[in-house]
Amino acid sequence: MIKLKFPLLVIALICVTTVCKPSVINFKSIKAALHHTKTIIDNEAAATLCPDDLLTFAQSLIGTRYRSASANPLHGFDCSGFVSYVFKNFSIPVPRSSYEFASAGEKIDLADARPGDVILFTGTHTRRRRIGHIGIIVSNQSGETTFIHSTSGKEHGVTISAMDKRYQKRFVKVVRLLKQNDQV
Image 1 (cartoon, rainbow, N blue to C red):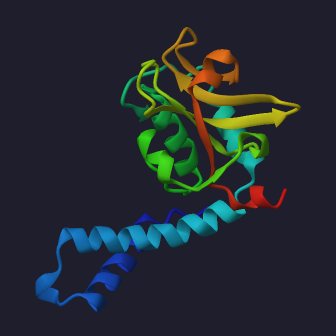
Image 2: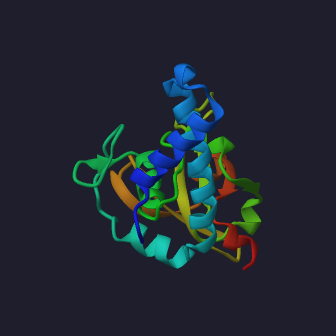
């Protein structure tokens, strides 16, 4: 797959210069145009990616240690760093923080979750219902849901976990980023 980072910047600059007067161009308008072009590419990449390929890549990272605020496999991953690293490997831009995933993709019921969908949980603070942990659905059959994530818990790194009572209490929602999961 061809990486499109430089052409994306060129497209963004063209969009900005055709919409704005040259004396009015600023970084906010460049960022907005870049975001618009990323969305177009995001839709194309997300529509063609096979969930099995995404999960094979994600599973190749099992055992990578946990590290807060990191999205680098050489140093370790936090939960959102892991998820964003996996999706960005396939040129699908996603949020970097777990909280921002709340507004990404399309919300679906847990019963309809498919491999490759993103699952969101609250953080470990029992009184706050704010999203603080995410993972990627590996399997969802016969009421048994498993997901891959980077955890600061006893596994302390990338692992596959079952949706046990501990995670059921913290469950918030599932979001779909891979549109072909709608067709399965």
